[in-house]
Image (cartoon, rainbow, N blue to C red; front, side, top):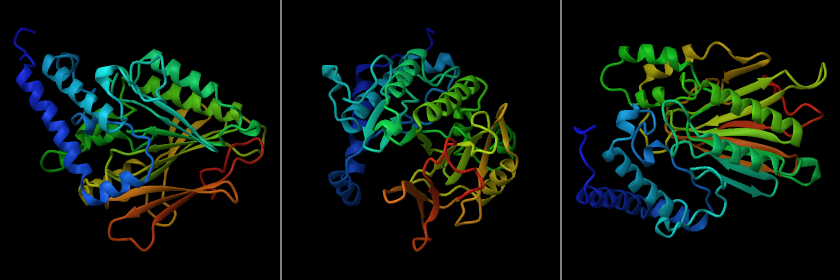
Length: 349
């Protein structure tokens, strides 16, 4: 370790200045400033708020003085700008789940609850979150009142990286076919299906399905970071009586709004690599579905996702607004919980 460079005071000042200027310059753009001044926010960071692939590097690199110094600078500015607290005073966001080592947030908003996972602060090649953070998460969800007793009817789980996506193992093998450095290489290393994260992913899916059954609540995963828009469904047939509807966790993925579209060849590969249903566990399967108003699984053009509650019939409208196709968003309707089953089948509405 003696060959590693030290993170000097000068480097710390430069890093602090870089992150401050980055937030200041981006957030004072007229469109961004207007949105931030008029809409309440629940924000969570991911790799791009630190640098690409944070948490997926080797332990020797990840723990070196320079990397840790950059992380501290990024974390402090994330706290100030995104969570509006002073890290020097030891402040935390009022909705931070106590007991863990990160900044995971749990927020109840009437019929909705938002669980924003801090999947970066504790990430390594062997874990996404530490055990104490998971314990804090499930303690919070266990404390939610059941939907039929006045609790939230819909849980939105914010995960920077999709829990369900195309077969990244195959994607990693074909990445070398594409010319030049690939912007998605860090995403390949980061994915939930990587060997070091598979057990954690499986526990997350099982706990969400169990929560849906016990609390009579629907769960939807909202994610990004893979530079495409897509729709996934995790469907379980393990609970409920014969003939009843299955439990479905929808996953809504949108791209980074300013990231240039990936090459069309990558879109073709993603389509091919998502042809098969993923057998997650006995009675649990994951499927990437065509966006129903686009007739394709992956939208490569830049896009953003808007969630629109419909209180009249307890539905949630997910609308992807796509660059160059402003007249008609790609739309998914997430229906209400019905009967003992917890939502429509993946081939339903």
